[in-house]
Image: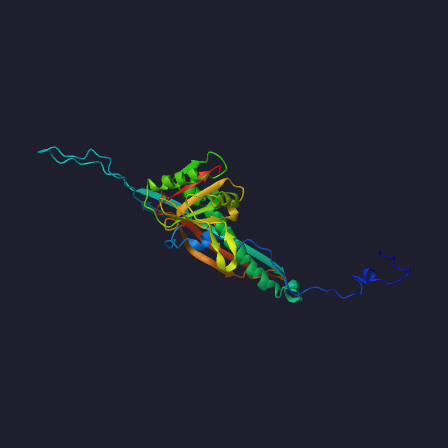
Length: 299
């Protein structure tokens, strides 16, 4: 049982914050999910951007639907040619800044040099911002003195469908893939979803095989790649889709990051007793084949 200290005894609790030294470790652990950015890692680079409005054209041609036989002795018949589609996206400027006082930059701190730590942290935040915009940005031309905003993948995809219920069934999953296959060739397909949808697909039985890792004596009960009648699809749980009711599937070669300026660092001249830093980029999303994918809404 606990025994109460005698009255008048000088305790560590009394001395804490007055004369006792603190046992503060010289480390700082960053609890961070900002580095989980599969789109910035997996999608390739598009064309160099040279204007605020980034444009490209694409041309979609269907297969023959029959009725092509020619009557003997007839004149040539000319069909009306269709125009290609001209697509546009907007160049978006994204910043991540920090501002540290002279004194704070010079005193001893846990985690090392304060400015160096804030600089590294700013770059990680910038990359997470780029990732989020690449999915969710809805597009704005910059008219009326507003910020230009790119169109993210959900806005660029030509095809979308409403899910019949929030649970992704194997039959619905195959239907989504079929919608893509109808209009474009099958490429390196990637599907992005929140963890609840990923768990649904982990439970599929027809299009994947669970296996036992004998060396580690463990049963592998999840999948990161599924093989279907249409082809292989890589699966990614995406943190920016958590609880969003969205799932999208794209050909990784049909969507590209297009930069006017890749992420770069500057230190503006101080106007007071502080150190300022800015990471910036000028970026947009390029979609040479917006038919090569599908957005699933209300999933």
